[in-house]
Image (cartoon, rainbow, N blue to C red; front, side, top):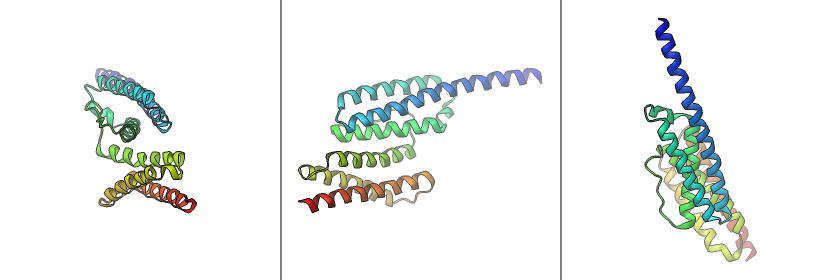
Length: 188
């Protein structure tokens, strides 16, 4: 019994150490993704791309840690990092009109993609506020259409929990951009 206990404690400690390291990488991914998004809002595409590549290196490092235990990527901190990364990639693709895909080595689930896309609509609203003006009206209409399309796709599915909150966020973002467009029309 003592041997079994000692062996189990050793395995547990090893797993905990891996979890702490994954958590560190995940926190860095989340922070770097937010930085990439902030840079994109200010049209700093080049620096944002560099940061996205760094983020992908962090995902590779996580993959090395979880080789034997893939279940460790189901931790909430990892999921949040993936969601933030998805948001950054979607925003990057939108602004650069590129088709950068989420690399296969990033362990991503449909819920994280949906959440990241929902959060992306908030970034469109922030960008709309930044560029709001009669001279950018067509651009703002495009933002509205993108948010409408996301909302429309999401209405086809019944969501619960976190995804329901994300859907509600998209609807609020749609109202915000409609208000921005309405205000500009009044000023014309």
